[in-house]
Image 1 (cartoon, helix red, strand yellow):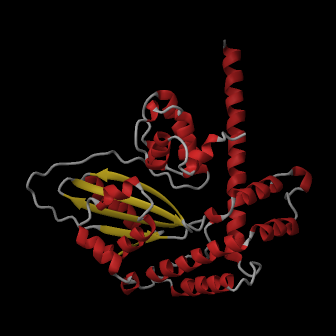
Image 2 (cartoon, rainbow, N blue to C red):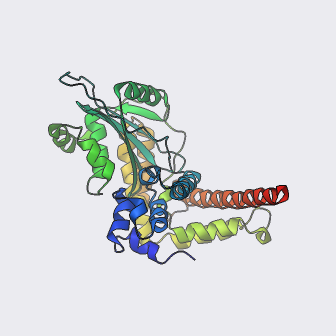
Image 3 (spheres, one colour):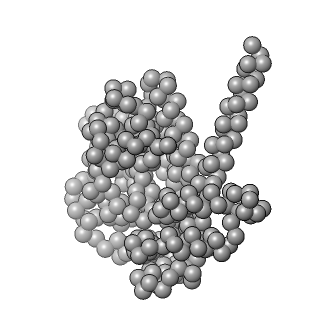
Length: 347
């Protein structure tokens, strides 16, 4: 059974020090009353940065690493940890332009934003993953050499397109502002205040890209929106050998999906579809933007979900992600047991 104290950390009503570490990565993990509870909360929140910051003691580092592995198996982007390097150039005048990249949706229906900014103290890289009203963030610091290498990686990533920085900053600020993201504050420290004012005032679609012919062949709404209860029911049913070789019958799956689609949930999916319209237009994908507009209109009109494959696919993807996670957890348990048996036989 899950620790009942976990909910109090997630909704910020529990121990303030544990809340601060789990949500913002602030404070010393080892000094908390229950460091393991803090790590469990960070995993539930998808706070990659906090988990990657754990270095000592060894037991907590291993627990945090296991949490990162769990997030990665669920489809959360866990990039290699950037070394927290900074550099001093004295009075040298820097001319390192800020840059922004936008891409998506990925297999979970999420959009990915990457922004970089530099001042006299060094460069900051900010990454945001947006799925509906949920946002995950990660940031790191880099030298100019590391930044150039990072840019090359972004330029060669076919899932991303570079957008004008003012437009990228507009989108990032829209989703990061007011969420108390620790990394976002660091990043804005590198951005001139006037640039942020301009980004908030601009209509980003005046800087929309031209279609490069590489628009995705299909897309789904964010799987993150699907309630955990629905994911659990479907994952359990799809893995039930007594239900047949393919698990739940199609009509049973459809019944679970229909039951999950409350008016509140449909409204969340509609808002996500409307957000997709802006993202698609920014990326130059007019056809996909039109599809997203149609999906949003159908959801707002309460026409149901049977004719909206992007929504039903999101529910199924969420369920299969959970099913895959359970299978990996079971395999790790088997592997651990086999190692233990091997060690005992060798003694």
